[in-house]
Image (cartoon, rainbow, N blue to C red; front, side, top):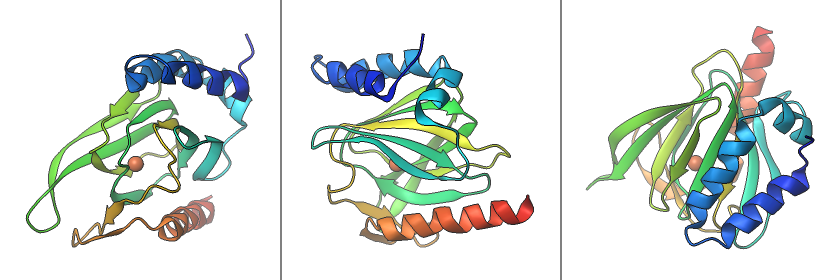
Amino acid sequence: MTLSVDDIVAGCRTAMTEHTPPLAVRDVLDEIVADPAALECALGPVELGGISTVYNADDLTILRVAWTPGMAINPHEHRMWAVIGMYGGTEDNAFYRRAAHGLEAAGGKEVETGDVLVLGDDVIHSVANSHTDFAVALHVYGGDFFTVERSEWDFETYDERPRDFERTRRIFEDANARWRGQG
Ligand SMILES: [Fe+2]
């Protein structure tokens, strides 16, 4: 069966009407990531790391996120629930708690191809790809990912600052340049 972007959006939209949307979205993603080839067909191949918008509305955002080998993104929060469905490679997630000064580490989880991870709206995490393949996932958020105000933290000092998409874009760009240089 052919999967389309419309199918992905429709599946998530229906899940939003369920009693517990993030769990319903998890079930939708479980099914979708079980066939990575169909998903890649629908979204196109990954050539470089980056964030592509599949769908964006006030109450729902769907992104395709490809983490370049060797890259890491600093700790950040979303202030909305998120469901991450891996369909290529492995995401290394590290979790944090707010502390008196900045953050303290609170465990981690490797999310592998076929895994689906649900994050509550107060989760703070950083993501790395320490592997040799792109880590590719469908990220579904219960809100408008691009406009909600939220924080990120410096990787080294754990200083809190407003989320900075321009900085994130540069992290992807630098990682892609390094990856190309190795090719
Ligand atoms: Fe995140």
